[in-house]
Structures are given as C-alpha cells and as structure tokens.
Length: 113
Image (cartoon, rainbow, N blue to C red; front, side, top):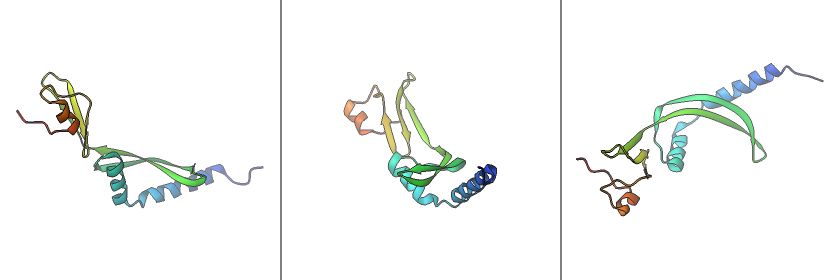
C-alpha cells in the first residue's frame, strides 16, 4: 500500500543534500584532506552528487565532489619517471640516475641543470 509519492520524497531528499553541500565549512575539510592525503586543493571544487547512506548504523550524507589539485611530475632527460608530487608529499617510484638510494628515499629536491 503506497502512502506517498516517491518523486516527492526523492525531491525532498535531494533538496536536503543540496542545502547541506551548499553550507559546508571548507576550511576544516581542506585541513583534513591535507592531513590525510597531503594534498592542497585548488579553488575549483565542483559538487557532483549526494545521497543518504547508512554508516555505523546511523543515517549519513555522502557528498561527492570533483576537486583540482596541483601535481608536479619529475622525469629525467631520457623521459623516465622519477617522482610525482601532490600537495606537500613526494612519492618516489623510480630513483633518478644521479641520486643515491638514500637521497631518493628522503625525497630530495631535484637540482636544476
């Protein structure tokens, strides 16, 4: 026995999620992202979608965003990947030919030639 229009419920849920996403305090969100993922967000953050979910036996709001971040890619003169830097973290996957393993592990800054 249907007692309400499902479109009305879905529309009301979407309005609630839109209101929550529009009123977010981005300063602590940026701090969390920087701490957890070592990334600095750029200004261009776009809301993608949201939904009501259950998390730890409680109703929660799942909000999805598209974010831009600054990334620095380091390659050697032969075109080989050395590292990628996102935010404040350098992730070395391959050592540079003129770096010792200790320098690569320490995330040393490249020297300009």
